[in-house]
Image 1 (tube, rainbow over the protein chains, first blue to last red):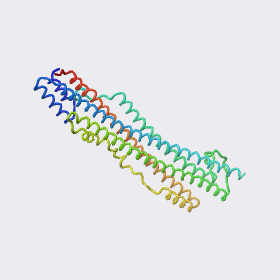
Image 2 (cartoon, rainbow over the protein chains, first blue to last red):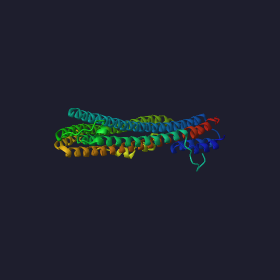
Image 3 (cartoon, rainbow over the protein chains, first blue to last red):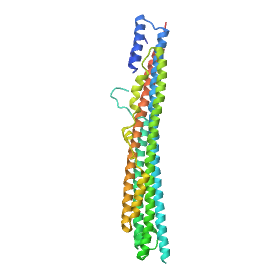
Image 4 (spheres, rainbow over the protein chains, first blue to last red):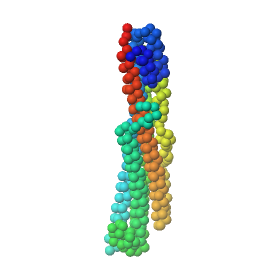
Length: 110
Length: 251
């Protein structure tokens, strides 16, 4: 793969504007000279690594926020479930109370 | 993927969509059950009062023998039923208040986690920015912050959800005192009205919280998809670019 072909691949990769500017400066210099120095190659690899880290950092942040939202949804679920449990228990206790009242009334009237 | 090709959902995405749909169905069923408990509570009061006045149907409902009481005894039984109903009403008010409080706590925790994530990401971006300077990059942290700006926005309905802050205890005491001032059938009617009122307030809160839950999960799903796409870009495009540079000979 020659320098021009590599330049085309790098320009299609979706790097940030600033990274691409520096990448193109390095590659244009190399194309003009007809070779790439070790320092220039390290710089290109360094910039690409920064881009990879940036993408992973952004993905991590999105996943963290997604987890926070899932956790919120779970807490809301629990709150509604607890409400349901409380109402069920209130309904049951009321039935017991009313039954007891009725039972006592019948017993005392006999 | 070719331009214009429709992206196919992954197995994980499909599983998430199914879970979202099922979760939403479960919540709708829970809302129906809650409504059922309220109907049951109101019915028990009605049946208890009817029993006091000698209704055989009410006696059958309560699993008791039907009895014809004198007016004084019937009034005493009815009042006992109303007292039990009032205690149930108080518990429902407390239940609704706890629901609202749990919703508030969940929202506060969510906002705190957003801030925590934002601060941690900012620190990582600053560190990355320092390392990027070695390669002549001077503007790394700010674009990250700009791109992530939108993900740190709490979904609108969660942000705007403001459960009415009221002096719940004072309001409960006031209603309780008002119920106590009523007597006889007027008190039965007032109690049923209060239960209907707290039922409506609870239903609104449950519906509202379920809406927040659905919005949170939809947003979470969207963010997970975006994160996967960003990782894919790093792995494929940037990885391919790195391999291409790596293959170059140097002098």
